[in-house]
Length: 394
Ligand SMILES: *Cc1c(COP(=O)(O)O)cnc(C)c1O
Image (cartoon, rainbow, N blue to C red):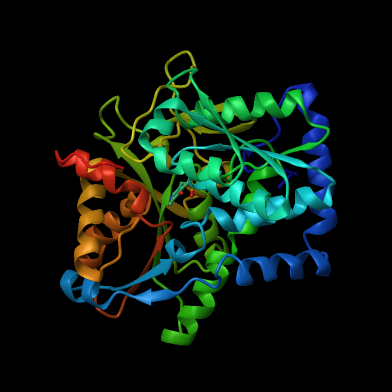
């Protein structure tokens, strides 16, 4: 495949003014990605600061209750800052430091990526500004407070639907405006090359660990790996080292919102078509004229009208499957895991669990499913309570 392409997808569809920045990033990444000093510094940060490796937990109660395949949970919720986002952030902020940048910017949806970026910026002594849709600043007020506490400036974005896609657009505009001292820490496997590759590589630690951990526990590969898909970084991380293992089903769960057959959905593969947006060719939810459609999900982290280009390619080639999961199913799974295992998952991750709950009972007891629990659910408690008609103070 040519550089930065995943089949027909990917590429670098950016204005000329941004080409210098993406070219500079590409060169820096090529220089450092296999550099022993860089790799050992990053490993030290992941293990010593971010609490890796994350456990691969056998969910015995869930397995017994569902009565089919064995269910393992990859506990990315136990990483420092509470989600998989820190894996990518530590890699990119370290890279930015090597590049001589003194300032980082980021977009955020649920606030997890913003908090992770603000955390790393505090640790590295860098300036940090985070762009967040105003709707999301209201849904995730606690994370806004955390980012400010960590020393970041948070910009509420009012354009468009004032959610994740608008935050990405605002961050890209800011990067064009000031590229000399600034690195844009993109939070998912999307945007122009080299971001989809950079973010996937930094997140691939997830599948590297799953593979080794499951070999130790079961002496074999899983039969299925299931992860939720917003832009697709936790899923790409969980899938990556299994792509060559054809016996392993790779299943991405998209946010269907109120249903993939309604207009209140964010299920990109199910409802989208090929297009170009945010610097990449991929699948997008769009209208007949190619305008990006407003999308909806109860989960701010999955509320994005596109999907990373490598997922688009895994879909085109049939290597991975993508299924829609509704708000109602995800909320059910959120409550179910809390009640059975005492683990409160992020509402994003609950989308993956909901699908595991559907297929595990149809599989025999010698089969193994790994569900990536991309984050923890503390941030979602107020919103889920409200969904169930209860008002909390958060
Ligand atoms: C951001 C986020 C997601 C969605 O992003 P991906 O890039 O698709 O992984 C999923 N889960 C959690 C907990 C998140 O914070």
